[in-house]
Image (cartoon, rainbow, N blue to C red; front, top):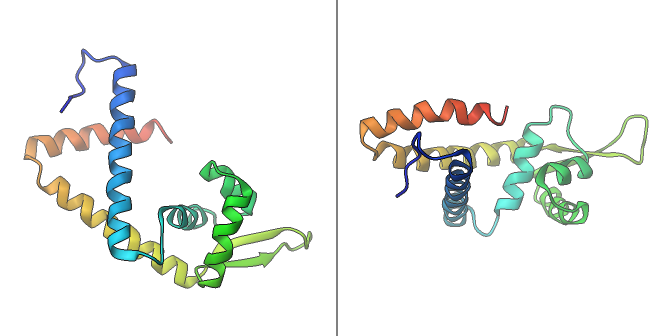
Length: 149
């Protein structure tokens, strides 16, 4: 395993972060498949997470932009999620053509269950690290998170 040290430049560190990100996504997808297949996939999870962060709901376009996918791809997923009771559609106040998407109580519970399951799996893996490695991980998380705030 490669380590990030002072001798490695930003480009090499970025490569390591991306590789770690892909491994994390693979782990989370595998966890979801075991616990929630066929009722939930990563795309649906991402939609729920986007809507959880939108206090007043969001439009299909806003969700698509956040996810980096087409509006039609989001619309197809949203249709199924509305039928499953995870998301509600509400007409816009002044502009009746605009539709706002929001988490339903069932969608919020599903999202919380998924997040809890993922956090437990990550915590299990982190707990297996040596104490010094856990300290280094914690020290590295703060600047990492600052990059994206």
